[in-house]
Image 1 (cartoon, rainbow, N blue to C red):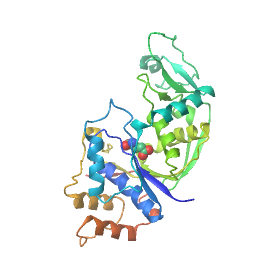
Image 2 (image 1 turned 90 degrees about the vertical axis):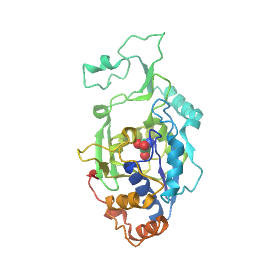
Image 3 (image 1 turned 120 degrees about the horizontal axis):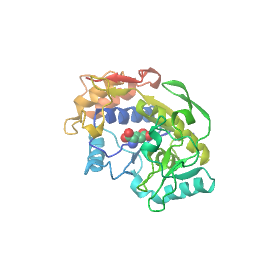
Image 4 (image 1 turned 30 degrees about the vertical axis):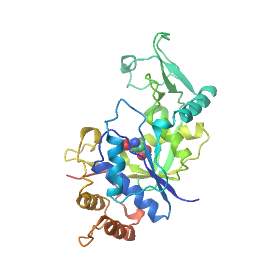
Length: 288
Ligand code: GLU
């Protein structure tokens, strides 16, 4: 099977160090395998989108040497595909409308596990749609983090597929689009390791193939918290890409030669040295 990898940023802010690491890691894995590297803009949630962020991310990536092999896929243009997949879940009886509020669920651990809504239906209010999650154990082998196992009902419960606002969830859109883009390898940060069982379960329900997964160490700040675009942590400067690219290479355990004068030379050296088996195996590393 031909390798097809991807980088799938959410436009919640400009490219920052954590997303640069995910872009670099997924790009290196794809190039190492002689495969294709695709881009998907996960602009599915206008409520969390920062104005101009999608364009800024797409403009920054080539400055760091990352050029997608196919046209960018925008999730904002994929609603018909999500509607079709959602209808299939509805027809299979796999989802249910839910009017429960956070406070309805707060009595337990905040998760919903009843397989049906426990609040009275409210015709005046749009429901969220949840997946009916059975007591099922999902196991997969992460190419870097090793064997993973999660009881889906315990860890995720009846998770939301379509929100009250009518927006589809990240888990659902990601699964539909990984299949649409025929992604064979998902390389992304360890913050999404525990999302993967939900995605694997959705793939099974929708009869979609399961790609291989590799979860990179997550870039953490000095206090051990995740760097995130929405908090504007560690933005990277596409006008001066070499320093951030060197730090990202070092973060992934690769030599970042001082004699490389430009991005192309630095990435060419990185490709030569890169071996996915030698990536750092930890789930998080500090960059401070
Ligand atoms: N859009 C997600 C993010 O920026 C990543 C999605 C993925 O790689 O599956 O955190």
